[in-house]
Image (cartoon, rainbow, N blue to C red; front, side, top):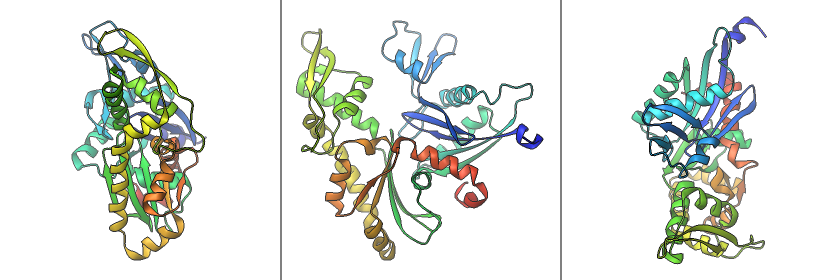
Length: 341
């Protein structure tokens, strides 16, 4: 390792609403929930990531609060976002040397982010110790991570459904030709489940439980070839206030998520209608590519295919497609430099 590389480290980060992934030396070194536990009295960070997530809703100390700094794909709490980024970088051990290296970061951002929101991400990374920060849009990073040659003169449609946003984009010749970014994704799916359990079963459940219900029996259609087993869901009875258990099946969750998924479908149709004819012809041949955790929802590919009459492909390891693409763009900076701002 040369002297220059020793004092200059490069990190790719998928700073997600639900999970944050850090790639260093072509390896995923950190994959943690985007959550911070803080003591409000001293403003001391108690835990970050999985440890903080385990504390959510379970601490009896009123001064201890668990915070998700990102909502809807953007920073909602500037100070906590700084702490999150700093702690995630600290977990990599990059800065643990007698002379901390100069840190260059590439962070992926939603395609619909505003200038103010982008500046908040940049400043959070700077405050966390990064010397040079570059940005790449999530759909472009997802396309690169899936293995699509984004520099070719061929149209590809990417649908990246994360925790806070669903990013829909048509990509060709290294650019996003048309795109749509809506704040309907994993978080809203969880809210749908919480609301459904309250209305249909008179039961209150927390966000973590809703996430587990979504993972275990979540579905986008009410008829699956290989349905999952009913999931025993624990919560509090609204009427008696006592703990209780309800068996939930995938058809119920498909009904609960129906309206949110319909909004994603409409955003896809709107993007397709804005696509130039030549690129639309390419997409007819290549189909639609799904990435992000939301793409793992059972039957989602079938539902979108039925709605659009196009082939729908789920990316390999869709949860890390965006992070993988960000890492590839960083490693091949010369090739992809015009995609990184």
